[in-house]
Length: 183
Length: 136
Image 1 (tube, chains in turn yellow, orange):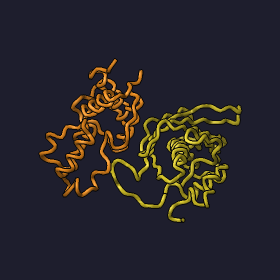
Image 2 (image 1 turned 180 degrees about the horizontal axis):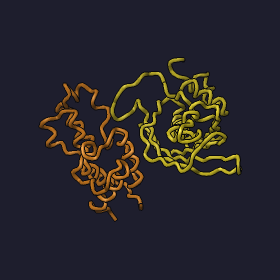
Image 3 (image 1 turned 120 degrees about the vertical axis):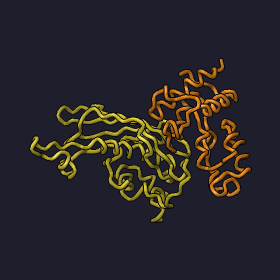
Image 4 (image 1 turned 60 degrees about the vertical axis):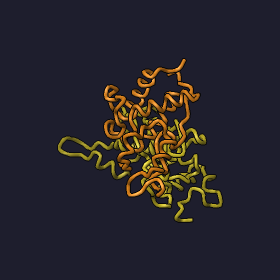
């Protein structure tokens, strides 16, 4: 989880639901390329749909990881379903709302929605939804082995937790949520 | 009232069509989940979750699909299941038919045993053992 697509967590119901938001800024360089002006017309800065899916996946993945206090390596394994009905651009605020549908030692399935706040009318509007599958990769069915350090929940992720008031995950002797390699 | 074999098949068919994004007509009793329907490892977990929801019973890890057998040298040698390995698998997974597999028990052939019929047998056993089918 290195390139974060959420800014902060605004609601957390342990083991059930996590809501995160992202504010979209024209200062984000990728928006200048997606889409740049060309002979066909002026620039159209829009957040790529794949990155909105990534934001929902990060929101859902943090929720899944929190159940085992971030000891498991939680990897997005399958996008069962994803729909997006509207564009997101500079000035919009995006809200990712994820719930756990089912979780066991091998992984989890989640449901999520994406909403968009337009400052023009101050209204939140549902613009997308998705069903995702996450694997606890050390317990995957294929039996493959992965590095011991938890490369999923790294330092950037710790910043999100501490900035969202979820300090308690980091407060267990300063260890919980910290990558194993840095202990 | 107990579900009939045909009702179980129809329900399994729906679950697999939704999980693997195939047409229900493609899901036949003899279909292999991997070879014929394109299932990958994460789909096995998805199938477990959906069967639980559909039929209202819990499935323990390793109960429907294999785990922790490949790395045991008593059970697998030179890429093939030993007699002990097949015995262990048979006991843990009575819903699989090892009769033909035993003649050439290569590890890479194991996935061939996971057919739609094997899932139906699994569901039938679970329901007979006290699992309660969901109403939808």
